[in-house]
Image (cartoon, rainbow, N blue to C red):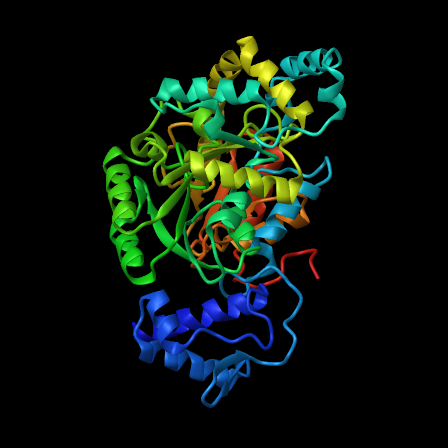
Length: 472
């Protein structure tokens, strides 16, 4: 335990130097002051300082204290959340494969619906109506808080769930990802600890690598995070933030139980933890599951979301629902980093579609279509010995176990050589314990070529790290 705490102090100071919060020549807090601020013993901090002196990062001046050493810090770069990974399961590489794939590449590993599944007629009507909008919508900056019409629509939707929130307590952002980034910039300091589910959406990991923080994983079960492990991490690591999916968990498809939700909020309250609840898959549920933001009333839970999964990934717009005083701080931060809110063009089209009444019918049809796709895809996968970890209540993901002895990374490399993009389990796992899993997007899995490629590659199991045919 003492070793872990010493390493935590060292990581925090390294992060401050890397982020330039501490520059060369700056004096570090005294041992006693640092110990008091981190809630540790002076002997733990003294041990950490001594080790950093041995590394050459800091130097001691007798009678004066400890100072950042004279070597210039390296350029800012994305930090490693853990040990360096095989490039095939690096979150950035998996994302690039999906985003850069040419039209002939199958993408059952990507995280979005095909364009044909989106409400194309409503989108086209929205763009035609946009041509009649005011000059300001077409050519001006967006207000820092985001378009009032869309915020009112969101507040009305939240009220249906029991979350009573004024439109001014909502902030629109350029995307759901930018919403998380703004929150991290607002709440986190170098060296802070953040908890993620293991497994979790891999871009959570990628995004946090842009912040000088420690990232720890908590095992995720069929009813939510492992609460015993969660409580231990809160007690021993004192995390500042927990980032998770609501409704339908990505990648597992699991749903948080009511019991787990209440226990989770009690633990957060007793350890001063802020929870960021990503609600992006909520509209895919057949009926609402427990929501932390609703149960908590936005006291220590922040809700975020966007419309990229259900409406259009081209209309980039996310939202943040949080405490009013935090919204004010986030508005200033959005001005500083983006000079205004999201594009008025995007918010105008989204608001028009949501208010027209067809959006709910689109969602209902989408849920029925996805139910069929999940059933059909699961059946075809099970015929190959690939079995869903659970049967999700909705959504478009199946988190699947491979036949014994198969490695998902090797399988993904072999499939990519045949123009099929898969999502191997360890791209989602901080601990690297999901080598036997793949995440399938059922809306992108209808092409028979996918199952032919899986059948061929499964016949020839490959060891982790072994090159796939056609790779160099």
